[in-house]
Amino acid sequence: MLYDKKWDKEIKTEEPWRQHLRAAAAYMREHGWCRGETEDDLGRVCLLGALMKTETMVASQVSSLQLRKLIDMSIPCWNDRICKSKEQAVAMLEAAAIREL
Image (cartoon, rainbow, N blue to C red; front, side):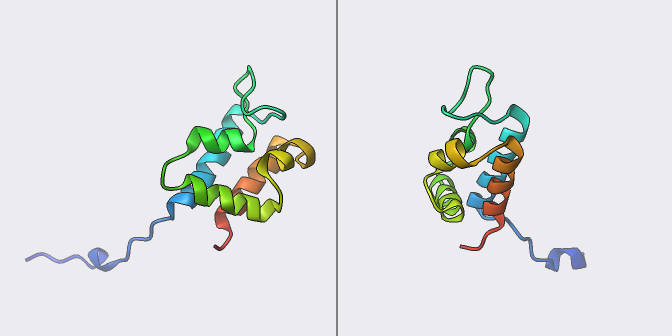
């Protein structure tokens, strides 16, 4: 029988909630950021809107929890009152994705 050493390598997969946060960051990077509504007429989204557009049943609760832990307030409040730019919002999503549980 043939054998290849590559078969012994462990395949590392990223947790679904981390994938969700990265997908939300990519979605916002592509479509833009807004305040005061989940999605505006131009298709730009707030943090919650980006999470909703990219959510999966498995990941949505954990990814939202991780983001809330990092910002230490409600997601809409941080998006609308604290966040100053799309870049800051994307950076927060990416930071939450690498944060330990």
